[in-house]
Image 1 (cartoon, rainbow, N blue to C red):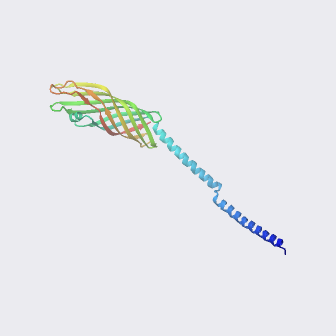
Image 2 (cartoon, rainbow, N blue to C red):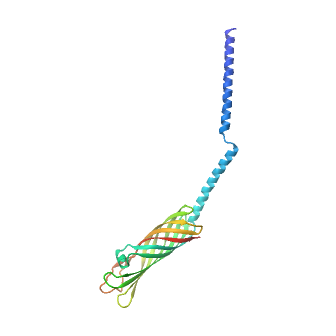
Image 3 (tube, rainbow, N blue to C red):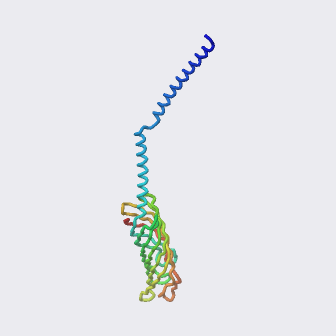
Length: 243
């Protein structure tokens, strides 16, 4: 047998061996690919789960946005603490403030905000035995921004002018005399809204108001008052109806 015959047999055997190994590797690769590639039913389940989660997130966002777009009317009760030390001395610190408030959505979380407050307190003039009584009726009209965190909770902040009607009754003699003061002040407010039900809202809030009124009239000869700060700090809660 010549050298070329031996060489021919060697290469023939090598080619057969290589083809055999290649064929085995190809079969193994196809088997592995079939086991790792998801079938049509698995793809459908994955697509359905993705669409469901996307739909739920969109629904939650829609519900949250709807919460910001509903008018709300509230009945409020808060503790009012005056900023003025003189006010606190005369009228024995602060007292209960009552209010009726409404917010009306305007655009992208911005709301028109209006309220009427009522505060009334009896006190004694400093240094003399004379009773006095003060009544505050401020009217607020401004803007409030409400951000809905989710479908049942939101936060807000507001800024508004506040027009004050102030009545002070002093006993400067055997008869009572009344002083009226009016003027424009301001208020800033922040709070939390909890949507307890489709139409029921709980509001926890705090605010700071500012207004100084000029000297009071009808005072006894030995009493003076140049001006009085009637603004102060409020903290309280409210129950509201969301339309």
